[in-house]
Image (tube, helix red, strand yellow):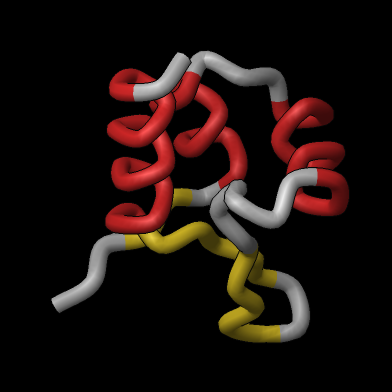
Length: 60
């Protein structure tokens, strides 16, 4: 079963600001992407967020 983070949770998990996450979504093809699960709910797949962080730790 997949876990999801809301924007504020992804921000806390990665220590990036919410505006930085939004900017990187547009500019960085390797960055994790948002998923729309309803008209008003945007989430991030926890595995994608954690995978991005692991890649950043291995290749700063």
